[in-house]
Image 1 (cartoon, rainbow, N blue to C red):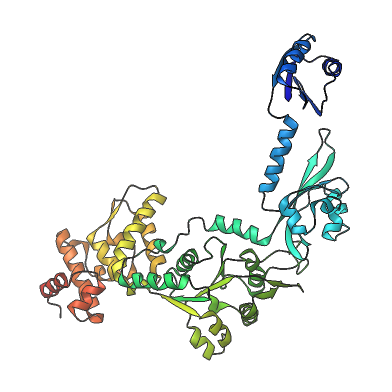
Image 2 (image 1 turned 120 degrees about the vertical axis):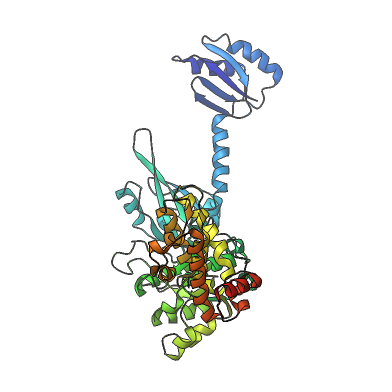
Amino acid sequence: MRIAILFADRVGIAQEILAVLAQRALSVTAVEVEPPYIYIEAPALDQADLVKLRGQLQQVPDVQSVEVVDMLPGAQRRLYLSALLASQADPVFAIDAQGRIVIANGAAVTACGMPEATLLATSIQALIGDPSLLDALIDSGFHLPVREIEINTEPFMLETLPLHETSGRVAGAVLTLHAPSRMGERLSALQNHNAGGFEAILGKSAEIEQLKQRAARMAQVDAPLLITGETGTGKELLAHACHAGSSRHAEPFFALNCAALPENLAESELFGYSPGAFTGALRGGKPGLLEMADGGTVFLDEIGEMSPYLQAKLLRFLNDGSFRRVGGDREARVDVRIISATHRPLDAMVEAGQFRQDLLFRLNVLNLHMPALRERPGDILPLADTFLARACAQAARPAMRLSPAAKAALLANDWVGNVRQLQNTLFRAVTMAEHLVIDASDLELAATAAPNETTADGDITTLENAVADFEKGLLQRLYRDYPSSRRLAKRLAASHSAISVRLRRYGIG
């Protein structure tokens, strides 16, 4: 039985309470003093003896009550601490001021590959194989910058937290080891928490529906995937969706834009680097995206911009899944699916000697083509409505809508920048427009401004006539490229009969 004795603190009261227990010859296995309580564990104490003991204890001056408790506070803390350590997926050690391992959780025991009793008799210096580690810990007050270490040839990022006594003296530290794959899971969760799947690819046109169906099948095939398409069509969005629809959906997803970084930085980002690999590098080295994405997916955007040296290194990884860090001599092996994308014609680059043909064969096992926005005109206005609502929310503006002339201008534009250009155009219009109805002039589209330049303000009589003039000019321009009412109706996402009526009205064709 375990009891808690409440008392008013004074000198000698603990000894008087324990003297009562000694007089009764009770076997006491644990005593914890946490004023205003003394906790006592006496396995042989039963309910009948408790009644007598309570009477004797309450005769001790300043003892206020004697109650039964389920667990002593110290035992409760140890139980919760053990549960807390066991729940940590990362290896965690507690060391004393001499570097001896005092506590290790289950993940630490597994990472070290030795029995817990053996591990607790080991120093952290011997475990890591770095005799200078303890000196570095002491010199830094047991608070080292994050550095890379190896245990059983496996790399970990070491994080230290000093432990202080009440006097302020450092009594040791808690060491947490982060495996690159675990770091990758967390970074990926932060970066891609709202990336979404195929539902994030907006559009209901036949072209997009066919693309989604094809992509959904390819997402389930664990092989390299190459996505082609013009800039701004949403290739990274499609790569996210393919990852989300694959068997790797619960694993990390990382993207690297090969055109945004010089060769040396792109190499270290993708493959990581070893300690002292180059000037300015982190002292302990750094894992690359491939290591952090182990089990998941790496998306290489603008793969056509990759240098010949990196092409050769990527080819080797695709061949056998192994690579070396920059400045390193250890072979690392990971399981990562590569999804790549480009807006450049890789076949032509191969013929020109700018891209390796063997790498193209490796990347182009599966392929998808993201259609340009002008190739799916039926999606222009639905996308515009969606982006308009988002822009109003971002700019804290009331709900706005597009005028008929603005819709016609959107349909007539070539959209060289594709979906990204459409989104930016509407955001700018929402930000700058003075009215709740966005007109064609608010869109600031060069392609639709020309027909209105020949019309002076004084020549405009009514809104209806102005819209008719704009509509006539739009149809005249488009009819040259779509010289039939059916093709023009498809281009403008309108009915064939409506376009036929307008063509007859304006004498076009």
